Amino acid sequence: MIEKRRHSNVGIVSITLGIIGLLMIFLPGIINSFVLFTNISILSMNFLFLFSSLCLGILAIVTGGKAKKQDDTYGKYGMTLGKLTIILGSVEIAFIIVFFSGVFFL
Picture (cartoon, rainbow, N blue to C red):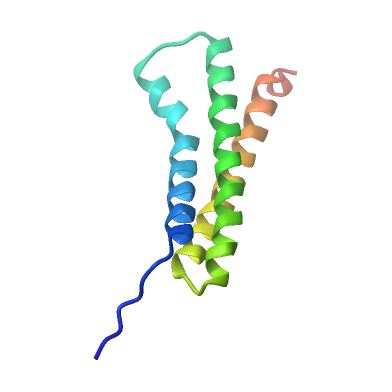
């Protein structure tokens, strides 16, 4: 007989936060491709979404650790998505800072 595994609520929250965090990293690019904004609003919108996604990534790692202690596989997946969110968000923030600081225009 195959035993069904039940996932804890903390594991489900962890994987959900990780997925939403990843989507929020790419959301400004999708919005900017359909609507034209000025440079100031693009920067402020990018930083708002990136800061929010970094916060969600941290929350996904914290809740994933709690779920992993309860032997929930969703906790492991949520922690992985949270780490990926933080890495991609940090790279994108660094790219925005370098690109808009004028380093390429020297």
